[in-house]
Amino acid sequence: MKEILVIGAGNLSWHLVQVLQKAKFDVTLVTRNTERVADWPVRVQTLSDLSSNPYFIILAVPDDVIHQASTELANYFPSKTPVVHTSGATPTVMINSHFASRGALWPIRSLRAGEPVTDWRNVPLVYHATNAALAQVLSEVTAKLSDLTYPLDDTQRAKLHLSAVFSNNFVTWLYEISHQLCTESNIPFEILLPIIRNTALKQNGASPSFSQTGAAARGDQATMNRHLHLLARHPEYAHLYQFMSSTIQTGLANKTRPQEPES
Image (cartoon, rainbow, N blue to C red; front, side, top):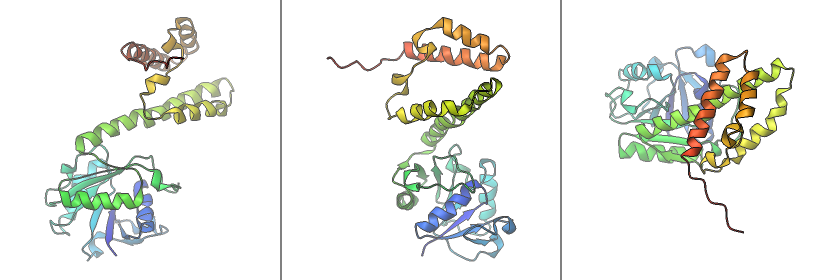
């Protein structure tokens, strides 16, 4: 059985060791703090205890320690050992150049330890490698984990990561603002859940601007003024409201919408 070493004991590692094992890979989790992961369903070792020649190594560590961690690995593994990181934004060249085969394997999903993913087949996996041999390995491995796999180079992956920030991280904080505004007026936030879900499920791969609605989209300045008045206690939200409304109006003015079919 092909052994994969996963370096790190964070949120992503918790998920990776399990999904890789389900795909019939031999997985070893490598961490200094073995007590922290004592209840994880995986074999755990420290770096100094390893004596294996792994299929490849996954660096599931924070972006700012990728180079440092890979430099330490260079003291234990030969240059032919493939090493990949799990960052969306960091280029593969940040892996120490001691390793001839470097790459990335990034799941497009917000993952938290202890919160299982029910269907990894629907989690998009992006991968990249500095040579064809490792690219083939990552293609085969990702195909065993998900039905949605995409080979994207460092530049493409970084732009996709930025796009995910807008569509996931920023949207989540907009939900938080909505939650705050509802709470202030003793309104159950749950009232908004159906429209939140409907908006998300409405996306089908076409430009989201085609389904844009709201006061800004229809140029309803009176409604926007009333909204701004309601935000008087939150000048930072008022500023965000004005900026977003302006962005919507400018974007729609420059956008060609699909023509309605003739009746």
